[in-house]
Image 1 (cartoon, one colour):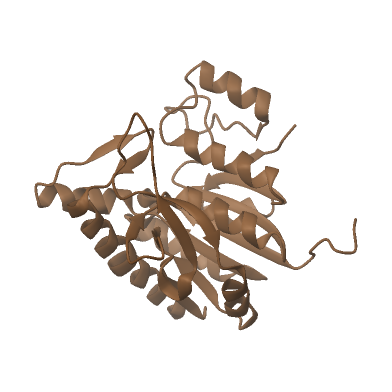
Image 2 (cartoon, rainbow, N blue to C red; image 1 turned 30 degrees about the vertical axis):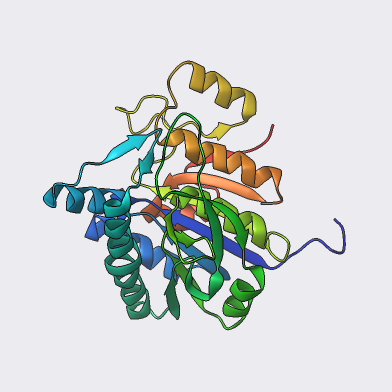
Length: 267
């Protein structure tokens, strides 16, 4: 191991909308998060709650490969829900568990800059692709023993907020912080891991490498929302992240110890 290889542990943990929308599961997850030894960043989604509010307000929603198309009205909704209600509820719960937590978006302290996605075939609207993570600012907060809770809203540096996939944000932060920390990226959601059969909770695929992933995609075993999640996992591994694990959010400690979930590696 090179003497320049970071040794201080940092866990970057992403929890999805299905966890956020379930008070019991969310509390279990946050309790587990509060017991992590070492530095930690929590990135949350919130898809179901935002979708329900949009429905209540009669604002049509479109999803493509698990990614939300964000028009002007939808951007208002996701900003209110993600950066407001969900983020501050998580922070308040973590404080009750003794965690010095701070809730932020990518716009706060210029943490995450992005650009509006340009795609020839699909207009994603106000959806951002990450350009830059403010490593020094995040490091400063972590060194003050602050656990950072990040909502999936970024900005372009010119006053425009952008809805950004929470899996992508987690991967981008994990990759950027790997220059200073030994980073482990964990995607926590409502299932035990990546499943061979979505109707059979025990059919967890313990290990996925690149060839297996391509095969599972071709067989339509892995599809929709899981595709960007695993794509982001491999991108993180390509860029210095130590490990990526996908599994049940409330089993956070088991995921950290490698005793649960699906572990993703290059080979």
